[in-house]
Length: 240
Image: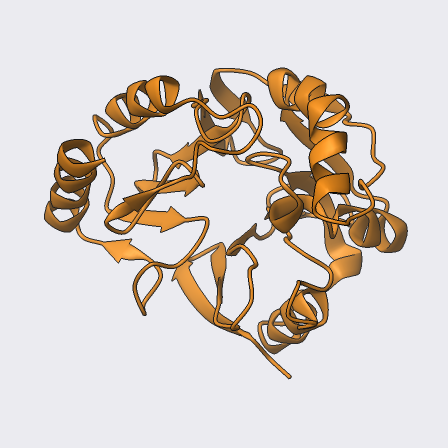
């Protein structure tokens, strides 16, 4: 069964919005960015199977096939953070495509210490992977044609969460920092309400036309339009 809704947001950005009953994240794929025969970049591949026994990864792959995107063509996995519902499927992709993985150093340190205990708390086996490199604050040049992703370190939901901004298309991928009319939880190990507020203030200043959150708190999943995004930031800053 397919639980993802595919949205071709820009010419090379496909978003897979989770529609299932149980927990799983939204996934984004940037196509054709990398040199070589594995040119695609996936952001937050999500769960393999969630607590409701929904086949999250199977559903994602089925939706990708509809867009003619293959798991075997993924060369890089970017994790906005290391919670199970965002990175559990890393291992499956690595095994099938040999993809490299990246996340922030702060998050990598967290996942291999406190994070491992959190996985166990949720009854999950921690995924095993070694990052090729760590994400750093600033512009990241990806592959060909000078494509850049702006990386923002945005702790609060987790110690090393990042948000990703695509300046050419004004797309902001927020992970679990901010959603539609809501924000990421801070009651997990490593969470901080104070840091989350500061992180949201930082990214609220960006010139964004599309906000792609890590989870849906509205039916359409993606917040579109500069005015709607500004109103959403104003609301969450006031009420949360």
